[in-house]
Length: 98
Image 1 (spheres, rainbow, N blue to C red):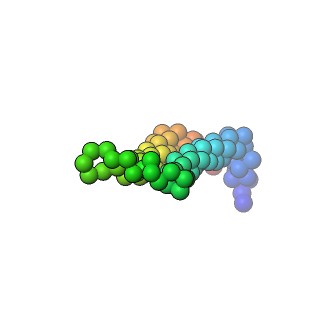
Image 2 (image 1 turned 90 degrees about the vertical axis):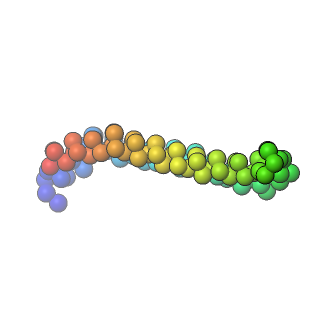
Image 3 (image 1 turned 135 degrees about the vertical axis):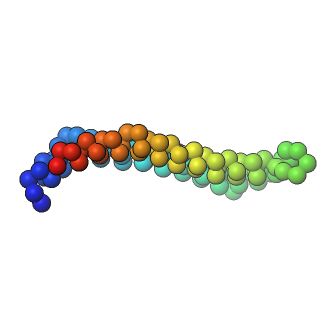
């Protein structure tokens, strides 16, 4: 590994970027787990609540299932937005240091 690359890897800017990336990843992962496993636990512990009719053809369980999928899309979209607007710019700054 050349000297410039080693300097970048040891720089505070690089270390800060790594911490930011892992922090945002773990926070979004935790949110997704809470939503998904919350839904699964609700199914396991209170099926009758999910069977409550909403309208003629649907129930709360179906609506909540769709909301779990939508929540995953929203979390993914947020990560993509963050990566494109923050992370990628900082990576480019680090590349310029090489």
